[in-house]
Amino acid sequence: MLYTNPKDWKNSKSKRVLLFGMSGLGKTYISNLLREDGDWFHYSIDYRIGTRYMGEFISDSYKLAAMKTPYLGELLKSDSIYINSNITFDNLAPLSNYLGKPGNIVLGGIPIAEYQKRQEQHRKAEVAALLDTGYFASRSKEIYKYNNFICDSGGSICEVVNPDNPNDPVMNHLSENTLLVWIKGSDAHTEALINRFDKNPKPMCYEESFLAKKWEEFINLKKIDEGKVDPNEFIRWTYAKALSHRQPRYERMAKWGITVKAEDIEKVKSTSQFNSLIENSLANK
Image (cartoon, rainbow, N blue to C red; front, side, top):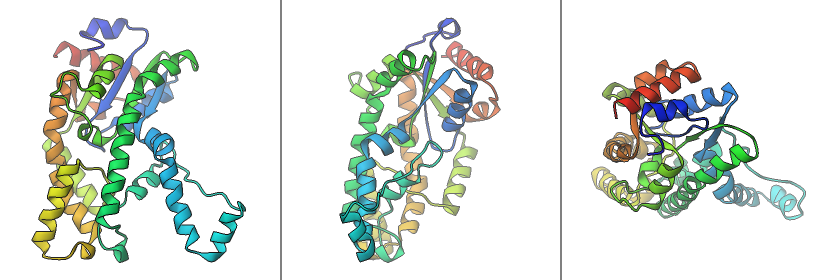
């Protein structure tokens, strides 16, 4: 690990950390808090994916939709209009909307083959964005003079790494450049996330074999054709299973770093409190 004990962390003049865990447990909250403190550079993996690695896919999907309307199509072909996504740290909707939900097109879904293609695009983009972590950590110091660096990873990070492989390139890169911190939720947190998702189901990423298995199970369970699947019903049905699938993966990743409880993250209101939480976690490692 980059820091092996509380003293290493406390005495470091250039702290580097990566937060990982289920979406909704405080990764972005802490990242924003530290950034607003003024001496932390916030590197958002999802933002990097949506701008650098999938921005063209996203904008092309808008252009494809515009071309179906003769009026917009003519303006687009004559370079009279400019179409692009307005993705920000606080609004990642263009990325999630592009990923979409598989199922009935009439209900807002996309064909499963297209969905799987976009999932693979995201997997490659996420790996690339994670491997940019060291570059941004150095860049933030050399160019912008930030002493400290926080990487706000996506919930699907556990789907693109193999923490059981000591030679995994992504895990090695991240552990060499940051302290990996797992924000571990309780059963109550999981239940709350499921309830929240049920009210507002959003696109998410799945590991390829997991998606294929759950898609087949759902088709057989409902006894319907692929094109008739209600996209929201499918992702609601899959969400709790996806969380259960990810939990042991996060736990194995945590062996490369440290673990903090989500309820302790919720109590953090300042940089000093965050630093103390990391020190205590290193002491208990």
